[in-house]
Length: 220
Image 1: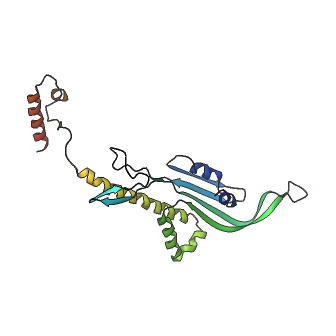
Image 2: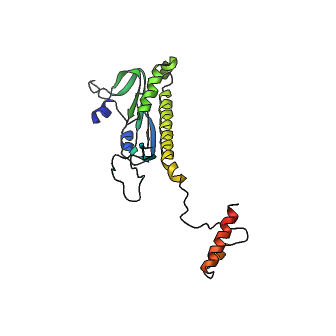
Image 3: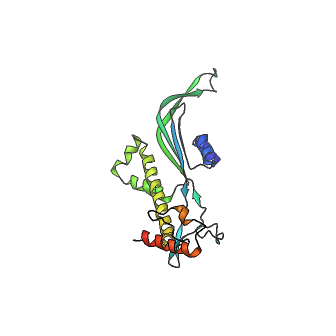
């Protein structure tokens, strides 16, 4: 992986940010050749679900048996990284020419017009987005506007986030349907105060009658 980064001159800032525990990071840089680099990371909740005994549940490969009280615990996270490298092309001046008699002489370097997008740990749907782009009549527009590639990445990543939310909603929908009250109803009727309800001077029977009265009023 190190040789890959060195060969394509991936910015060191991108590498450092990939090692940090942050949710999102991004940056841009233009080097002496006029080559532009744009990069960002995207933190995603890894959500894999399955239906067991008629209910959806999270599947985490690291936990065959979940901790007590954590029936839906899932600690799977993904952090894809993307680097767009735009080389403008043409003959440019780059640094010093060590082979020249004058070590301060600059070297003329011919750079091709090239656009490269590096995707590290990207979901499969990102690759499918580029496959669809390759079949469209406007695919060559990328050479005039390379940021179109980032549009595809962001759109597919949004869909990936949306899918994670939909999966989570399937899991927790069954939990939300459970409506067994674990505590008595303490909503207030007009004219009653929390001090009256929580008054320790009231007897147990009186508090129960007051509770039933409040619940009947709020449920009308």
